[in-house]
Length: 235
Image 1 (cartoon, rainbow, N blue to C red):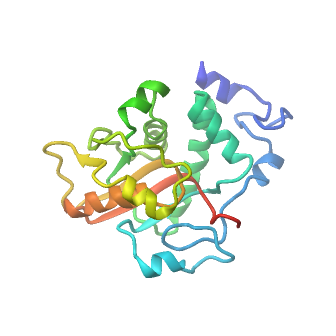
Image 2: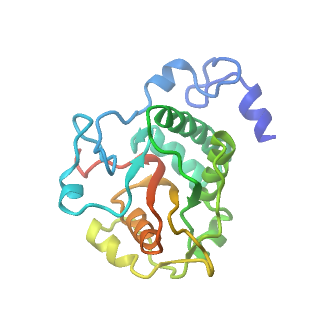
């Protein structure tokens, strides 16, 4: 059903205008998406130009190596993510994952090292029951099929059901996540290059907590793949 909807319809998901066969967005809407151009070379924070490292990464280098995101978290991508995440609009998630896969394939062609496995960011048990699915898990599965990179969904565990991160600043988010994650019993990541998968990176606190956990367990490199990166407040 989802497959047919995605690949047989020829109307744009955003404007309902005509789209090319096999496409879910028309050329105009796709070109007007908030593509992430200038960004921090480490955390992908939107910046006026590319190739720079933001002040936060210079002052406190993160445990992850690099964040890869196709978009800024802005309209209409923010609306698409909300509908996918909170209204179970899976075709929208699949559409964004396909765009993300093309973005990553281009980055690999440009020299970005290919990870050995994708690790979806785990969802708290209560939120998983409420939502019925883990959006990061779905994104990881779709990316795996498109890129041929295996998923290891059970390697990371959420062991504390912490309060929601929305509305917290970066320092509060880091405090909120202390001890929230753990590796599955017997998990071996020594010497491996792994990539975390999530929908949005806001302050990077979740990515940092998980990357630090993996690096302490011996992982050689941790990257972060997300759909969108949030700008600084007011930017």
